Image 1 (cartoon, helix red, strand yellow):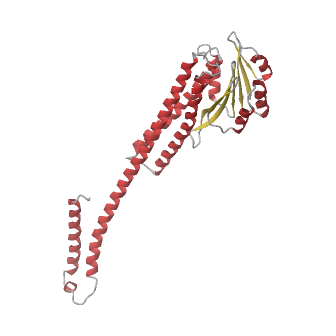
Image 2 (tube, rainbow, N blue to C red; image 1 turned 135 degrees about the vertical axis):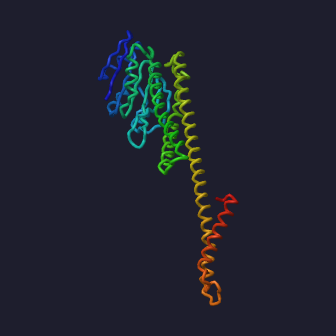
Image 3 (cartoon, rainbow, N blue to C red; image 1 turned 90 degrees about the vertical axis):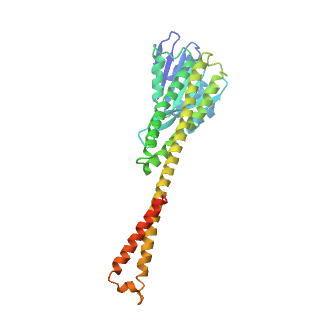
Length: 322
């Protein structure tokens, strides 16, 4: 589905689902147009290539749909690959969806294969007279990128809450499923970092203003988005370290528990071994063993076992082994 949003020179907005007039609108620098294409067909991509003069390799990137975040500076436009997050109800708490942007002097073309709430939110924000992003295309691009990056925050907050819960469980009721949760969270954090790191490079290139599409006043806003990505990556690194520390703490606690169990089993084995030795001696059935025919021989053997067992326990306690 394709949607064309036009901002006229007088500040009025108009939606158009037919792209026939895009060529005429591009020739009018006083107009800003936003052409958004969801789930593009080959005809949509060919229209973008021919109308906006984009490079065929950029179209191939959209078709393959497996690119990392990046920016390419062409003669008259930027080609940007940015990633938006979609909340998922499955095993993964979020999905990374690529968003392809072509940014020219008076136009923005956005292409995505799945519906993105960030697109709708930015469109409403652009048309709201109370919070206008600006009267030029650079401000619109800032508004879109800012909306995308801000949506990373709730995901990181959810991971933060789960990390704190896992830390609290370490000394209480830590289970095997908790270890799986730690590795799952670390995978999610690594996935977020792989997306955010190249997106910082994208923002760095935009702030250089190589094509003159962005104004000097836009730099502060782009810097704000860049700062958000820095804060996010710092948070991701911190939580990864916390999860690693939580796992190390659990392994240390578990090793201590196992050592305690082995210590108890070793002490019990020593006591049983002594008792087995006594029982073995009196079970050898030699003919000349006085205790075998003694009236109190059975009680003597049991008492000897008990006395040695108690003595060993006292010795182990004195040595602080138990």
